[in-house]
Length: 131
Figure 1: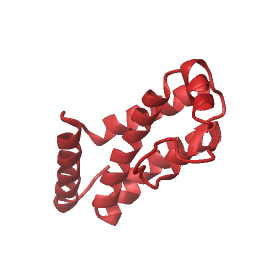
Figure 2 (figure 1 turned 90 degrees about the vertical axis):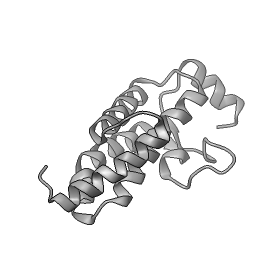
Figure 3 (figure 1 turned 60 degrees about the vertical axis):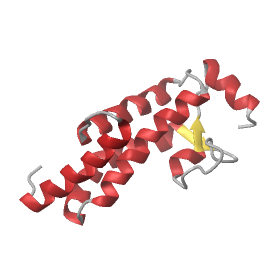
Figure 4 (figure 1 turned 90 degrees about the horizontal axis):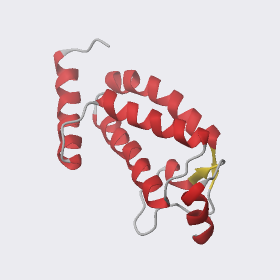
Protein backbone atom coordinates (compact mmCIF):
# COMPACT_ATOMS: atom_id res chain seq x y z
CA UNK A 1 0.00 0.00 0.00
CA UNK A 2 1.35 3.38 -0.90
CA UNK A 3 0.22 6.45 0.95
CA UNK A 4 1.13 10.10 1.05
CA UNK A 5 3.04 11.42 4.02
CA UNK A 6 -0.18 12.90 5.41
CA UNK A 7 -1.93 9.52 5.15
CA UNK A 8 1.02 7.75 6.77
CA UNK A 9 0.93 10.22 9.66
CA UNK A 10 -2.81 9.71 10.11
CA UNK A 11 -2.35 5.93 10.29
CA UNK A 12 0.61 6.30 12.63
CA UNK A 13 -1.45 8.54 14.93
CA UNK A 14 -4.37 6.10 14.94
CA UNK A 15 -2.08 3.17 15.70
CA UNK A 16 -0.39 5.13 18.48
CA UNK A 17 -3.77 5.59 20.19
CA UNK A 18 -4.58 1.89 19.84
CA UNK A 19 -1.14 0.97 21.16
CA UNK A 20 -1.74 3.16 24.19
CA UNK A 21 -5.09 1.51 24.91
CA UNK A 22 -3.63 -1.96 24.48
CA UNK A 23 -0.51 -1.21 26.53
CA UNK A 24 1.82 -2.37 23.77
CA UNK A 25 2.96 -1.26 20.35
CA UNK A 26 0.68 -2.72 17.68
CA UNK A 27 0.50 -2.48 13.92
CA UNK A 28 -2.61 -2.60 11.76
CA UNK A 29 -1.48 -5.79 10.05
CA UNK A 30 -1.01 -7.34 13.50
CA UNK A 31 -4.57 -6.45 14.49
CA UNK A 32 -5.89 -7.79 11.22
CA UNK A 33 -3.92 -11.02 11.72
CA UNK A 34 -5.44 -11.43 15.20
CA UNK A 35 -8.93 -10.88 13.80
CA UNK A 36 -8.35 -13.39 11.00
CA UNK A 37 -7.01 -15.99 13.45
CA UNK A 38 -10.03 -15.47 15.70
CA UNK A 39 -12.40 -15.84 12.72
CA UNK A 40 -10.64 -19.08 11.75
CA UNK A 41 -11.18 -20.35 15.31
CA UNK A 42 -14.86 -19.45 15.08
CA UNK A 43 -15.15 -21.27 11.75
CA UNK A 44 -13.63 -24.43 13.24
CA UNK A 45 -15.59 -24.24 16.47
CA UNK A 46 -14.67 -21.74 19.15
CA UNK A 47 -14.27 -23.61 22.42
CA UNK A 48 -12.83 -21.04 24.79
CA UNK A 49 -14.98 -19.22 27.36
CA UNK A 50 -17.54 -16.50 26.73
CA UNK A 51 -15.12 -14.07 28.40
CA UNK A 52 -12.43 -15.09 25.89
CA UNK A 53 -14.89 -14.70 23.02
CA UNK A 54 -15.81 -11.20 24.20
CA UNK A 55 -12.13 -10.32 24.58
CA UNK A 56 -11.33 -11.60 21.08
CA UNK A 57 -14.21 -9.55 19.66
CA UNK A 58 -12.60 -6.43 21.14
CA UNK A 59 -9.79 -6.72 18.58
CA UNK A 60 -12.39 -5.83 15.95
CA UNK A 61 -13.26 -2.73 18.01
CA UNK A 62 -9.68 -1.54 17.78
CA UNK A 63 -9.62 -2.15 14.04
CA UNK A 64 -12.84 -0.16 13.72
CA UNK A 65 -11.32 2.75 15.67
CA UNK A 66 -8.37 2.82 13.30
CA UNK A 67 -10.48 2.58 10.16
CA UNK A 68 -12.80 5.36 11.30
CA UNK A 69 -9.97 7.72 12.24
CA UNK A 70 -7.99 7.74 9.00
CA UNK A 71 -8.69 9.58 5.74
CA UNK A 72 -11.08 7.91 3.29
CA UNK A 73 -8.23 7.04 0.91
CA UNK A 74 -6.49 5.02 3.63
CA UNK A 75 -9.79 3.64 4.92
CA UNK A 76 -10.52 2.07 1.53
CA UNK A 77 -7.15 0.32 1.47
CA UNK A 78 -7.48 -0.94 5.04
CA UNK A 79 -11.07 -2.05 4.55
CA UNK A 80 -10.52 -4.35 1.57
CA UNK A 81 -8.70 -7.16 3.45
CA UNK A 82 -10.87 -6.54 6.52
CA UNK A 83 -14.06 -7.06 4.52
CA UNK A 84 -13.04 -10.62 3.65
CA UNK A 85 -12.48 -11.53 7.31
CA UNK A 86 -15.76 -9.86 8.26
CA UNK A 87 -17.64 -11.88 5.61
CA UNK A 88 -16.12 -15.09 6.96
CA UNK A 89 -17.10 -14.08 10.50
CA UNK A 90 -20.68 -13.39 9.40
CA UNK A 91 -20.83 -16.73 7.63
CA UNK A 92 -19.48 -18.65 10.64
CA UNK A 93 -21.87 -16.99 13.09
CA UNK A 94 -25.57 -16.40 13.53
CA UNK A 95 -27.57 -13.59 15.11
CA UNK A 96 -27.71 -13.58 18.88
CA UNK A 97 -30.93 -12.73 20.75
CA UNK A 98 -28.96 -9.97 22.50
CA UNK A 99 -25.40 -8.66 22.46
CA UNK A 100 -22.86 -11.08 23.91
CA UNK A 101 -21.35 -8.27 25.96
CA UNK A 102 -23.57 -6.83 28.66
CA UNK A 103 -23.42 -3.43 30.25
CA UNK A 104 -22.52 -0.76 27.77
CA UNK A 105 -21.64 -3.03 24.88
CA UNK A 106 -20.59 -1.14 21.78
CA UNK A 107 -23.27 -1.15 19.12
CA UNK A 108 -21.25 -3.17 16.63
CA UNK A 109 -22.60 -6.07 14.60
CA UNK A 110 -19.92 -8.48 15.82
CA UNK A 111 -21.24 -8.28 19.39
CA UNK A 112 -24.64 -9.39 18.13
CA UNK A 113 -23.44 -12.72 16.68
CA UNK A 114 -22.53 -16.10 18.13
CA UNK A 115 -20.67 -18.98 16.51
CA UNK A 116 -22.73 -21.54 14.63
CA UNK A 117 -20.29 -24.22 15.80
CA UNK A 118 -20.31 -24.09 19.60
CA UNK A 119 -18.01 -26.39 21.50
CA UNK A 120 -16.39 -26.65 24.90
CA UNK A 121 -16.81 -23.96 27.48
CA UNK A 122 -18.30 -21.44 25.07
CA UNK A 123 -21.18 -23.79 24.34
CA UNK A 124 -22.07 -24.11 28.03
CA UNK A 125 -21.43 -20.41 28.71
CA UNK A 126 -23.82 -19.41 25.92
CA UNK A 127 -26.47 -21.79 27.21
CA UNK A 128 -26.05 -20.39 30.74
CA UNK A 129 -26.47 -16.87 29.36
CA UNK A 130 -29.53 -17.78 27.28
CA UNK A 131 -27.67 -17.19 24.05
